Length: 74
Image 1: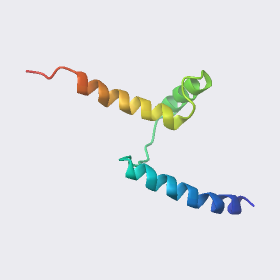
Image 2 (image 1 turned 30 degrees about the vertical axis):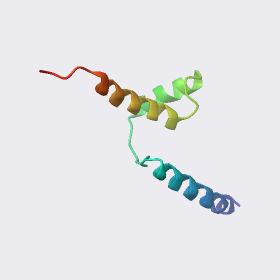
Image 3 (image 1 turned 135 degrees about the vertical axis):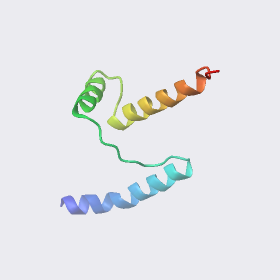
Image 4 (image 1 turned 90 degrees about the vertical axis):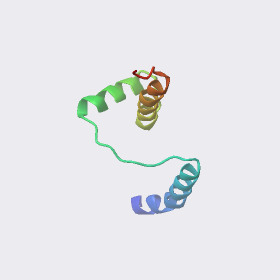
């Protein structure tokens, strides 16, 4: 039964990936330390984020967006 459920969601996942790629997004896998995962889960439990993905996207975006606004060294 589980295999059938996975099989039925495969076309949806593939279409979602193609749509994201067309929008300029890239999928990547990262390993995070247990303490980072726990911190993310704590923020989700507090209602700050809905998913780990959302939390990680926010963290990555914040890091690189902050660099764009920073003053360049002379």
